[in-house]
Image (cartoon, rainbow, N blue to C red; front, side, top):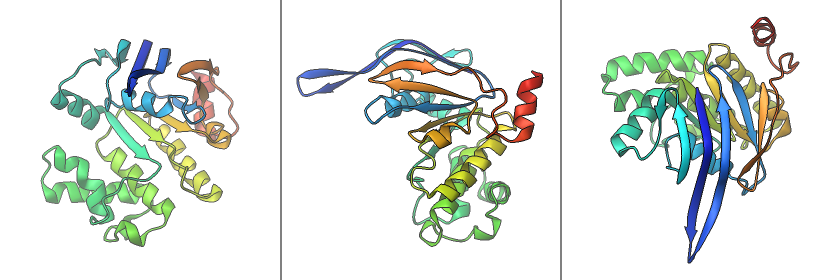
Length: 242
């Protein structure tokens, strides 16, 4: 699905150059559910921005499927983001003046889908995350867990091959966090590749394996947890029989 080979990223800070990612090697296969863990300043957000084609890297290689991602024009980068990748953020990133339905439908607007059709599809995705009755509500009228479900529906509506989730439970209490991870695990069963950036060991334990970053370097990557007791039984069974 994706592969990074000796990827380096620098940021200019005044007269100094900050080496944010250092020779990062990383591979994620189709259909995996993977956690990326690391302390603040470890390079997690920079890595996610590169994987999401939101930022470029300075050296190395990033392959998304059979495509080498490097120096893309903004229109080409937008194409990959809109067609291949769904994003989920800690702060939800919902438009406050749009209803839940309108927020979910937004990616289809950028794909040129008619208003009637995108609203019909958005309603189906809200139903999938258990929020169809909240279609006409604004984000200010919803709880944190509900807003994150709307964000998940929005990430799914473009039928991405991969979802990048940046601290998706970071703004939620423990019970709601568990519910959101249940939903991501259910979505994962449909075959979508999911990367969850987190600092929470309990969230990482819900994934199939964990990649650890420290000071811009990959310092560890677990073998797949084939019998992970935290995953739904169907997921563990598929892994055991593959």
